[in-house]
Length: 173
Image (tube, rainbow, N blue to C red; front, side):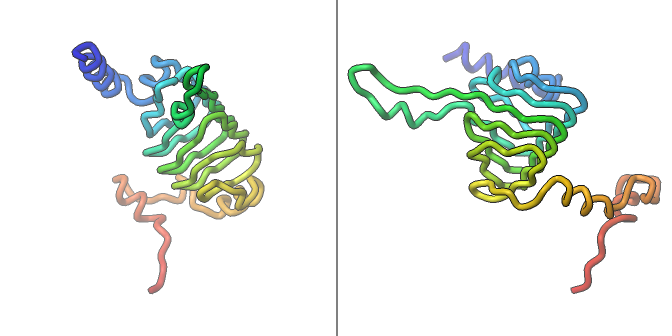
């Protein structure tokens, strides 16, 4: 019990010092290059998670690498256990509050909409959203839509707020 408490304190200190990406790597998560990790993606089986290059994992994203419900099934062979890896391809954006279930493979060039629950593999070039996550668009259509958004060169001002305010979308009420 005391050892567990000390481990939790040391992990929290490591997370603060190393940041979410460094902490996840030290725990065994395989993370590619140029990623933005805004969630604590470490689970009870961090070595089962692989993340490609140029991936953003937004805040409050949960990766579940096991299915604890099998614990309820007991017979002469004992309880059942299911562990399955999660793989995230390259050039992927996972929105805030997403849950990714055991065994899911998310392909390359994928956007997972905020709040989605990913229960099945997501093919490359697909935009998914919902509970459960379902295809809502393609990567090509997404690129066309985003191409109309402002770029950093469109921003004006010296402070972060001024730069953001200079490109905020206006809406009439």
